[in-house]
Amino acid sequence: MKRLLLASALFMLIACSVAGQQIGDSLGAHDFSQSGTSPVKGNVSASCLYCHAPHASLSAPTALWNQTLSVQSYTMYGSSTFTAPASPQPPLASSSSLCLSCHDGTVAPGQTVAYGKFSMTGIMNNADIFGADLRSSHPFNLALPMQDSPDLVASLTTSGKTADTAGAVKLNKGNIQCDTCHDAHVQSRDKASANFLVVDGSRGQLCFACHDPNRVTTGLINPLSGWSTSIHATAGNTVGSTPSVGPYPDVATNSCSSCHQVHNAPGAQRLLRGASEQDCIACHNGGNNIAPQLLNVYAEFNKIGHPFSSTKNSHDPTEAAVLNNNRHATCADCHNSHAAQQTVAFTTAPAIRGAQNSVVGISSTDGITPVSPAVREYESCLRCHGTSIGKGVNPIYGYLPARIVFSGDLLNVIPQFSLTSTSSHPVMHPRSSSLPQPSLRLNMLQQDGITTGRAMGTQVFCGDCHNSDDNREFGGSGPNGPHGSKWTHILERRYEISSASTPGALVGNIFPTPDLSVNGPYAMCAKCHDLTQILSNSSFTEHARHINDGFSCSVCHTAHGMGGTSATITGERLVNFDGNVVAMNGTNPISYNRTANTCSLVCHQQAH
Image (cartoon, rainbow, N blue to C red; front, side):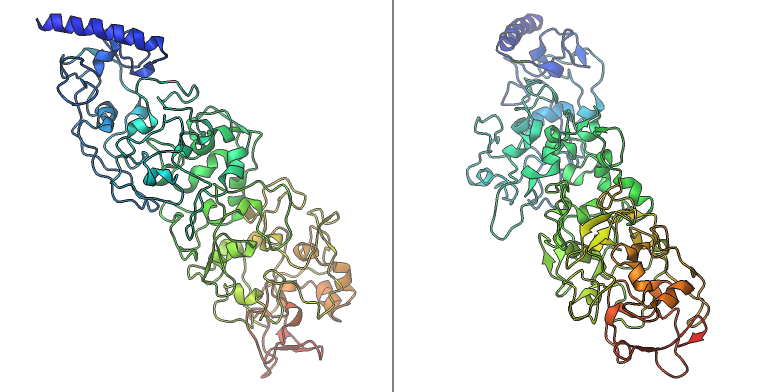
């Protein structure tokens, strides 16, 4: 009798299967029959029977379910940016529970309730087994009512509907379940990503049914803002057929899947394809995984570069704007991958550039207040180089002068560049016109030291000095920005800093009759200043003597600005002596007075 019932069921399901296929139903890898395409095959020819029992469903009130359900307890998704309550366990026999009866790996296909265990061969692909730890899979079975977020489609919480007007991407009883994104009966609506998607997932179509990069919510920041015009949404670079960069042929078509992996993601928080901050390396390491090839940013870090994070010291979107975390430097600290644009035209200082669109910054007024988004390049730099308590002197960057005049934290550049500074390079404010600057060029020089580049303007970027030594803005072929340089302090060009064993002692590294070319010790300064003018003593009567004797600019000048005030050093023209090199002249304090054209100090065993 049992054999007769099974035969009847087989006949009906074969008919159902054939009828379904005639209207475009394609089980694909879910067809476990001998003629199916699944890596797992059974000895029953009716493909429907492996999941359904039309007259004898015992394990579920819906879908006439036949596969033995898993009773596994799951660890659900969670991250610092997932603010919804912890997801409850998916109820037994719910739509997601049906899928997990195979995909959590605890119950093998073919373990039917109505007909017992079918004889099966083969094994499931590891990528299709999610296990009990679902923290690296997209959240589902959320605690209801669903929580709103500025990057979600507004109708999700107001009416329980996605942005898919055709209704293919839909909530299940007001919740996200496996069948919100997957249709178990049709594998290849999306030909490139044959993962039973309910719609073609290219260009983020499936993601944007729930996530809205264009939503504007008063008082809240949409983390996806700027996506539609970003380089990652528009780049036509083709990519290799590798799972590290998504299933589609180019960056724009991969869209969200370039960086995010919906199931079994290596970086569980935010489902990144690359664990921690390594997600960017798949495309930005100069490899042939993408064409045309991108500039090799990661090679810059191997020079004297920003310290890249470790797994114990990584970036998190919810951390404070002022980065006190040991000055870790990651891609996401300076770039917003959802909004970054390719820099095709170089803006005038201090405006932030397209590659840093929608990044957070810090106000130069108090060094604490977040600026989101940052509108000036230096606001981004102040996350670490302002009031942060995580700063430290790292020997890899070279010798650090000890300025005679400073205020508080020597590594806090805000007082050095501020309007209250006696003198400073014009980073945070336009340069002063009160003193003539005969050496200042009209245009900066390219890296060859000859060709004219960008017009000088009234302000400069931090990146005009701190930049990759081969950056393309000034004639190189490498990436722009302070990723790394062969020169100390991540400087774009050579800048020698004189030092001494003790203040007043002989200076150890001097360059008599110096090379004034781009290869010489003054190359960084020569980008903006005409060294022939300086040697003519047009701004100071002793310039030629000091330079011809081989002393570096750093002995007398600070590179940033006067970080404090002094009764003896007036500070014009960035004069602020290096206290490790110069000493007091007898009992007289170290002094400089531009108006009187006098100074008092001992340098290189010579009293001035």
